[in-house]
Length: 452
Image (tube, rainbow, N blue to C red):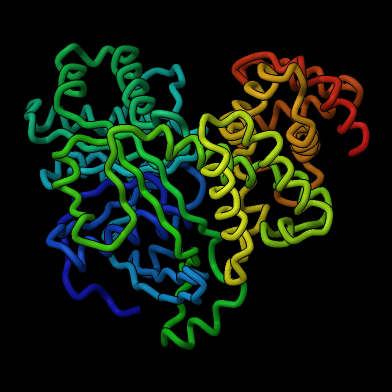
């Protein structure tokens, strides 16, 4: 693959190089570089020990994003070459290279997408010359190295733009970092520098990125090169960022046509998107896989499960949302149209990563609100939860994909418990759900019996 025509200084440290960040954040950074004077490249950090981004390394960080879909009734197609990833770092193997990036004065931004399960604090001693177990721990180590190297200089602070779909993701990340700082006794001066000279933005991301095309050879022929990191995406894109005016000036998206919105209040953007679009994704995954359905489009167009999903959104999710009926219905229709994109092959198995934490963030608030308002359990979401518990039995090839602790806990449940007691044990695991879900037990148990 042809190399870069010009190198930009590394200004962004990015945790995660999966399909979404490459077709969303890196795609947008490439546009900033080509359409504005931004001039910044990415140092991409592998946030987990397994894997190596070997294919992306072999391509020197270069890849293409294929955008296809329908906008305003017209077919849209674009292939964009993305060359902003300049360095790929595996901190478990190249710890010194990872910490060395903390000494780069030009680095200004940290991006991440470690899923809903990634922004957590885990009590452990501060590793020496090795990464902490969780992403915020690794980030705290990096920040402390930067703090020591530059002597707490104010202008060496960082703007954090987490893309994880949790509420107030920027503040959650900041709280984790401060928790590590206190736990590791890194000092009041370091905590002060974090608080006063670093900016933690709450953000919301929205773009359907199903991954590579099923048959990339046709696209390769069109490109004249075999791109094994080619990724597809829908045309729709939204990045809502709650940030001070200074960040808006540093990220000049107003000079582009991209749908990047700087706002003082993310709540309306977040609630609609997470509860409806992401909630629909999470609800359909275990049900669809158990029924032999493999893609989002197949599910939405299915004679039984398509109407089931629409009823879930309109009858169980919509009544819990604090917006007008018109606004909610318009958004639901937009989401369903996006799910039917004929150019997108969004596999349910690809959405299944960390499904437990996704259910907790995306669907559990709807369940609780619906129950509080009506005194009843939303039956379709309960059915999805039963199918999710069954999915974690491990009968579906390659699944579940979750943290080792959660996978092992469910394995023990299915090995040690009678089928009748599975629902009770799972729903009363407060560590997983943050509360007891015992009120769901009769409904979930009933659906679970049907699955077994």
